[in-house]
Length: 388
Image (tube, rainbow, N blue to C red; front, side, top):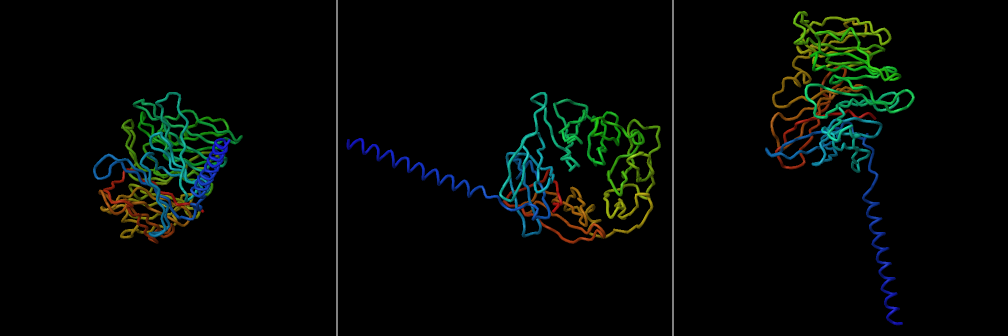
């Protein structure tokens, strides 16, 4: 009987011990899963991806949220190769480069992962090249890679007007700009087989693709596609296709405006050989030329102003030999550039340079330090101005 009592006592103590340990684990997990703060407290998010450090293969992704030199939050991952950024509400996505898991940031507490759906064959890799917020939900331009050589294939995934997630037919161009107008998704892309740039649109109601015939066979490349003041605007630079030997190549850049209903174009030749950046501002079109001028046009293609940017910090973005310019983002009154050191560094990942979108004068320079003492060389960078 005494033995049975001892056994019962041991059993009871064991159960109590398990309960205490379990409560401790539950409490620890609860503390470890703090909700964190809203990521929109930051002004910017930048992604940096490096294949080599100190000359050795060691792929690594860094995602940095920043508002200033001192107010920054870094996440580092050596497993997932992600970096193309997209904001959806208070959430930031870093899409995978190679079809593996992408990163999802919902608060300052950390991130989770998600995967694209697999293709018809196990070897098929889907990579999101471009994403934008549509009227009915997220719009994603997805590249298809199943090992085929000699052709480019993209598709567009979107939410249709009847609220169904839909995938477009295969598109044989490399899409790099897109804009949704009504129930159409307009996009520009490069057809590798035909060696030409094309302007097309996807009808969301029928899921059918259409070429904008005015721009299907032209000797231009599209620098930018914008929707400004109710008009589709394309910014074009001269392009010498190998199949257009009998077509006279334009000597200057051009600007085209068209009504989405009629698609009748109105174009003007610009007094510059090339446009290097373009954006919408106060229902007008702003163009930065290769010879350092800021041109402003109405959507009726009337020149409003012509400012010389020579010698400014903005113009120096394109001539600085110490840093490489990876891109400029425009949102509201901000223009933000992301630059990285031209050589391997042990001190910084790069800088975010904030400009006034109206005057293009430098307002702020944010240095993003390298958090570990290693030789870092950037292979890919992306930047988002966070919408509040």
